[in-house]
Length: 225
Image 1 (cartoon, rainbow, N blue to C red):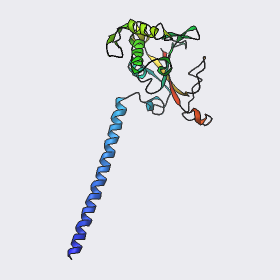
Image 2 (image 1 turned 45 degrees about the horizontal axis):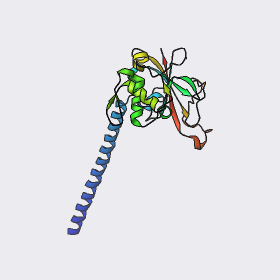
Image 3 (image 1 turned 120 degrees about the vertical axis):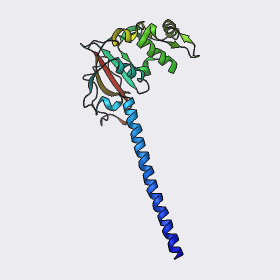
Image 4 (image 1 turned 30 degrees about the horizontal axis):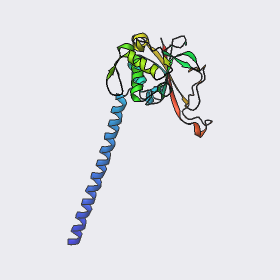
């Protein structure tokens, strides 16, 4: 009789443990869902908003969307293009390639920026805000826009003619842009006559693409309205 009572107590304890474990797992699951929801609301321009969730690959945006996108460009592997409404490129700066000065209307930090994180941050600052931006050297000391441009020249950078007014003061401040989204495979070089309306794949996984060439890069094109 005493053994039966002990067995019942043990069974009750196991049952309570199983119920508590189930409640705990459910609570953790709900907490993770809540955290994911908060992150999604915090980053309103997350990748899901660009295509599947909004049911389109275009939308109209302003500086409040474009500036955070530029800051995320390197970390999230973007290449960003800027055009006038008629499709003509908007010059952001010039660079020297094969001894020839050419106009650049895109931002691709992986290819365009020399140096480390500090150099990238200074370059983004120069592109966006020009002489009104704040710049720092590797040791943390302050530098001016002109100092940064001189540093680029001293490092034999091919980047030239950064605008002292920056993109914010020239094309972003009071403008609306049509945003177009697509992807390409990073090992495939974009052609010189690249057209975002016709040359971008609409698919994230193309069966004809070799397995050795599966690094995808997001293309975002902005057309000034």
